[in-house]
Structures are given as C-alpha cells and as structure tokens.
Amino acid sequence: MKELINNWRYVILLCLTLGLAPFVPEPHIWGKIKWIAGGAKGMELLDWLDFLFHGIPWALLIRLSILKIKDRFFA
Image 1: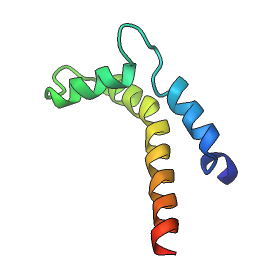
Image 2: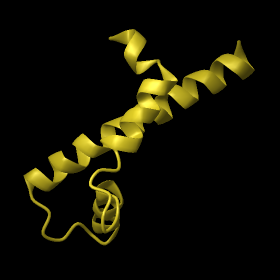
Image 3: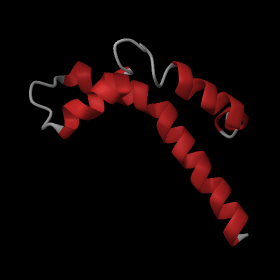
C-alpha cells in the first residue's frame, strides 16, 4: 500500500479520474469546493462524504509533493 500512495503515476491517475469525475458540466470536486466556499448551506452528511471521497486523491498529491520538496531541500 505504501508503494501505491508514494507512486506519482498512481496518484496523478487518481486525481485525473476519481478526483475530477464526473467531468461535465464541471469537475465534481470543484463544485463541492465552491459550495463550501459559499457557506455550505444545505450540505448534508452525504455531500461531505462525497467531498472527502473526491478530495482524497488531491490530498495524496499534496502530501506526496510536500514529501518530495522536503527530501529535495532538507535532506
């Protein structure tokens, strides 16, 4: 499992598929972020879980980026 979450190709593939799906009319995660930024009025538990589900690949990408930057500059 550790090899998967530290693999750039796998994480980017997750971001481009699960992280952005469905793509039309706008990426789902983007719609959820706008909804939260607008005050999250009317969001229910399922909406928050959906945001978490679509946000996990992006969190993995941010985590991996931070680890690589840390290794490069502070190693």
